[in-house]
Length: 325
Image (cartoon, rainbow, N blue to C red):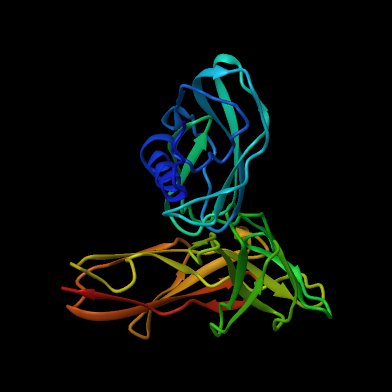
């Protein structure tokens, strides 16, 4: 005669078996599909996510000893360490032997680091690590106004365009008047800005700063243009730009001054330069862009250049500084 087993004995027996023998927690996917090994470390990684940008990529995880069973999509596996990404197993059919299962990882990574996914499939587990990059935005290429040329204003202002920069979510346009150094700026999420109102018959320089989703930035090259009003036969030159010495340099005598000049009407329209040192003119008819200063006294000095074109239009540069030891 069989002896009746008390109910609480049966419950203890089931608990012990679940805890130490069977592992009663089911896999993410448990449809009878089984593998002998699952190798997350053997997954090739080509395209990695960038912080703050939408990402979606398939990864093939190798297995051995597949039993040929079919399996459905899994529910998502959320990343840890770096959050914001989710891995989803795509449905398929195991081969009898070795093969791969396909996992799609998508989302927006929260920070730089390694996004970790605990993958459970076919009775096996492995940890998949996906590196996340913080690659900053690219540098914009300025396209209009064209460098060192004149352009005409309209009643609606000046339009600016530049090429799209990689890994960029927004842009800031900076425009500086080269005569009074007045600065204007504007924000945009597209690669142009229209209708910026500026005073006419003035030279300007402009640049664009591109920003990534984590607010890191890249600065474009600087370009210059002359903003004309009504069509004119001749425009004033651009202010000369210092090349040597670098600003606030400390150096020994003799000192070499070097600068560059340009004109919206072309370099041939520049007639000569006036070289000023410490508020006195030291060369009133320079046709070259260099000046040697011999026996210059020790101490701080300032210098600037006036550029004069063939129509006697004159433009003064900024004032530059250096110190002789």
